[in-house]
Length: 330
Image (cartoon, rainbow, N blue to C red; front, side):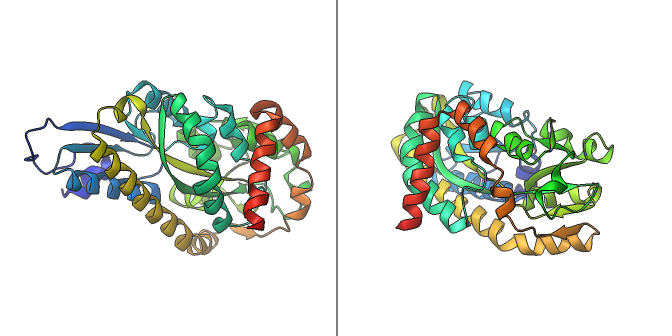
């Protein structure tokens, strides 16, 4: 098998002997929850390979995709503990350690991907990066994940009333759960690796995720309807355990930052380029796709914002909304 296969399977360390300067090799574990063919894993492979090449093999990174080392919440705990060296948590995992992260994942906060990146890469990173470090996380770069959309097996969703009574799986994140509840859904939390089975067995009527997740995890095989609700944006964040970060030289840390940015750009490019095609393929597979007017959905988010403010802190939510407003005006 070639090196790419080993990386995807997450079963072997990157090849290439270390020959430089007599330093000991650092072996690192990079775990995430993306499927093996999801852009997150493709970006992770690029990151690992370029770090290996630029450090002359001094740093060898094994990738464990698709929740191989635990579900997303467990991965975040292991990153903090240094058991996993590198990961891709979302704000929804990091807010369990620092509540300010919860304010980023507000329903219908962003209007476009361009607005997202300008906001997160600038003022939001300046705000949250030091807070993450206090909790044991070195956050290097916002990668991508996407706007979340709603699928179900009962009927098309065109207006908010169509969501009422649907039993919807969400991750254990108050922002997403409260958004669905505000629309009248019955929210159930099911571990990410178990979602496909839960959908196929009718344990829940539906789920909500970015298009790439719905596509690469093949949820469309067990869902009849997809509504492009774009109700929340969240993203994976390239994160290194602070304990692991200390093992790196300043030069190696610079390489991590530079290659983390490059890999994040790759993931954003793939997500952006592939989404329309994936929607067409989902429709071709037999899943009916609707594109609702989002204004009536947005108008019902008051209770969700109240719950998120109580969890994240009203000051944090106000600060996040003010940041977005300022970016829009710039």
